[in-house]
Length: 107
Image (tube, rainbow, N blue to C red):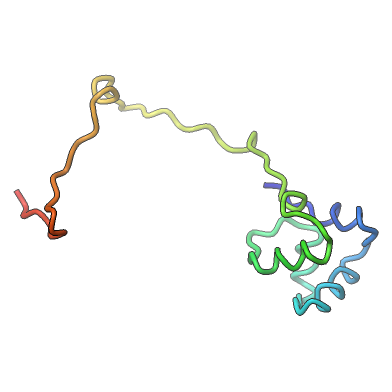
């Protein structure tokens, strides 16, 4: 995912992080200067969904404008080196379970 806050804010005439920080505070989302700087110019490692709701309400945008998917950056699955061709086509193993929810005794 690519974080797109700065462009979304600029599209609405908000050019400074401090201005967005003030608007967020008016909606009871108080963000420290350090965190605001990271949200504005960086790629946040995490963000609360409630905070994302407030940001979208202030900017009048959808989450899809702030978070841009980049599926091409996801690594391809690694091939299994020790995969047995016979096991690949084998049906899944069935594990018996009791109907009363208790575990089956060990074998």
